[in-house]
Image 1 (tube, helix red, strand yellow):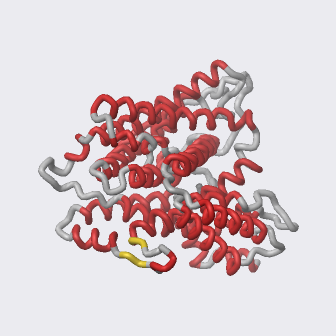
Image 2: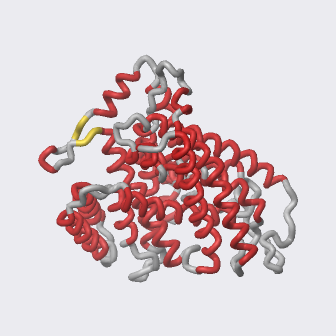
Length: 425
């Protein structure tokens, strides 16, 4: 009874509300819209001044602008949640069984490779040179935004579609993290990097202790992040590695794995604060100029990003899935057909968070940064709208008894929007 009472307090209800797919995505979108409007208003200098305000101890080389704190600091919280999710999926979830994980994993690879190739092809034709640095911008998928659109417009579709999208997006994020670590890291200080690894190892021991103590785990995580930042490797990588340290199976007699415990505890902070604040500082692109508000879309980088996210993601995901399911023993999960991947392909074109981050890393202070960020916002909006329409179209169509064509009739399964559908990403 006490547990039930605790679970129904106003604060716990607020935490659960903020953690939901729909609310988390709405907060992030709202913050991005506010930033875009403010950055193009008569008060745009105020927005810019806030973004460039420097805070932090200079002695530790942490005197950073608020915008940098959002991208390097707060976003590390989001990547910690991603790391915890990945650890759980690999050890005990959808990535544990290669046969079950094969299709979404390969679809994720296709959904990253083709957009990169499309971007490079368009840029080579229109503006070869520094613009090529942004080849990785259209490779990412925003988990929170995509799941929010699916939760709103995918009602009535099999809940397995959400698991498929989550698996695909998680693999997508893992590959994006590797891209950031390999291609967007310069001048590594190996002493501080190994120091960060050492602290992460200590965190791994502390998170497996008989009882998790936040007053030990949080300082260790902060030190690991600071050392990673000082090393020259993008500091968000520390968040992922810390997440990987959390045990994904129940230990010490606990009913719930610690991956679930920490994810449930930190997701509200990620969804309710970290992602919206990052979106607020990253999406504030000033569009005024001689070319008009939509002038940035004429930039070759913008053209390449929009084509790669909206078309490349869709064709990459659908194409690889079709080839894999027709030429190998791998099949889609029970209850899901190829037609269901049309909206999924559009959902993966919602780049947003990680795409905005890679745009910042690709064109730091360059002329292509503003067009790149604006293109990410436009492409994500287009992809979200197309996903919404195709989700409703898919939900209204009759379903066969063997959607995945594996020769076995599909069993009755939960639908998106049914009671008890999980809300966390």
